[in-house]
Length: 614
Image (tube, rainbow, N blue to C red; front, side, top):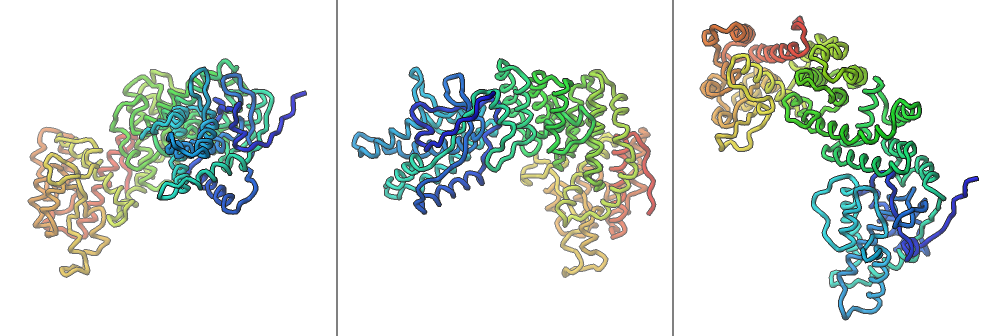
């Protein structure tokens, strides 16, 4: 029969007493308390001090015997224990600033006590009384030895420890008066040491500790799927493999830390890998259950899975940063990076194993444009989400040496119905306005993309799409070739101004067809002139779509069928030159922009240009 847990009520002074030291076990989650949780503790302690309550119960900690230099392994309560320890370190730092040969005995006594509660000597080496969550001990050692924390952190545990210590240090500083009187701080330390209590519940061994951990929550921070999965991995491997699993997990976290936001989380990685393996979508709450099933039935080996995580995390982080899975710069992900899209990443992660460069490029191009089409057409997010898991599954099952044709076959279902969505983009584009920030960003992207297409088809100098998206930071610098959105019919001449023309409403002037890309140096010169008087500035632009506002001569494309075809198309769809610019011309140019974008998308998906009805 298992030994029952033993309960012990301890003051903070006794908890971190002479023979007491603690370690957060390797299967634990990161230190995760943020400003809100720290402030809750500060508020509780402040009320406790102001009300002169006889004691304050901080909560329960569950510990198990630890077979190393540390005496206790923290099964539950690492968040509050770490925070309490950081508070003691903040108090210690301030009190130690008063050390001097002539310091009062009471100060010397308190400094000795706080020192003994925060560190001890083991064979001549100073050791903190708490070894925190994996990845954080480096910062704790700096604090214990009185050194500054680094400006840059490398994982979430370090980031949160640094933030918490700075917040707690501000709290402690409030107990020292402007003239340096530390009496209130001594009172704070005495009350925390003697009158703040924790309940330490001890379980007999690590096996029971792992079982307990899986069933518990930390204060205000429920265990997520990644935390539970980490615990499950430790349950399924031998103790001899704990270190390798822990190191792999920490390395994966470090990789993901490079990528901010949702993508930089273990939960997103676990969900992406699971959906690709099974071919089904999972809610965040069900990700753990999905992996648990695969591990329990033996489909997934816990050790192999755990040790593979650093590579998969590195690949996902690279993709989240707009690189290829292997970390190479690419122009394929400009749109999704610009719009901050992440739904498509599981498909790209699933294809990270492909070794054929052309197949990788084909996948990148199709996934990128499928995601962009979803956004520009205002496809319902849940509709796009539903295609991701089956698509990722098909890509994951491709052989390493799959060809471009294989990638396209695996993407057939995901890109079905593109004609309808491309037509929907036209409906959206014709209603876009420069006055709407979201739509303004979409206008910039579309103009950047179609300008590159036109330049390439005309065999002219063509920059990457990202360069056309880049705004000019210094108009005085002639080498700064960024671009701004320019109104062809100026904003200053909108209906309602001194020079009002009732046909040029705000809706027309801010519409897509009245906008073009122009370098800001030319933009400033063009100013608020009538379109006819801007012709010289448009003619000076290196962008053909802007230059051709003055008209297009087919002759310059003679001898090249593809170039002539593009020129014919633009001449057919373009409105009259800016010498006769009108609201009707704005509508025609907006339709030209959609046509060029649609052609580019159709090239990606291998489909015919969709028909439209005006």
